[in-house]
Image (cartoon, rainbow, N blue to C red):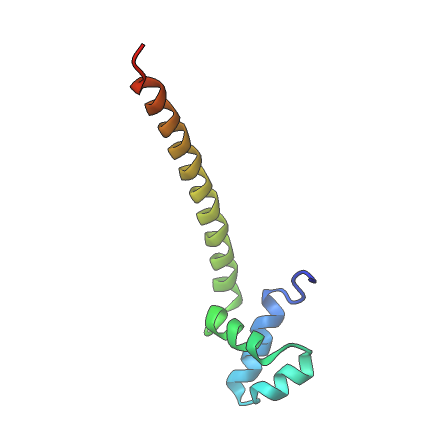
Length: 88
């Protein structure tokens, strides 16, 4: 499976063409993507500007980092409770 083919700027450009009135099937054929891909992009990036998309990507990265941090701390907490809970 190939990696990302389009970055945010071309995706927003394609969605801009969609808002102008170009049909989804024409856009899909023109850019070589499936119509479902355009619908997915529209759900994720619909109505965003490039600055908003960049901020959204940064927030997603921050959210992933925080989720990992919480998972690590939860694991540490569970291990400490197990050690303290043992009767010697």
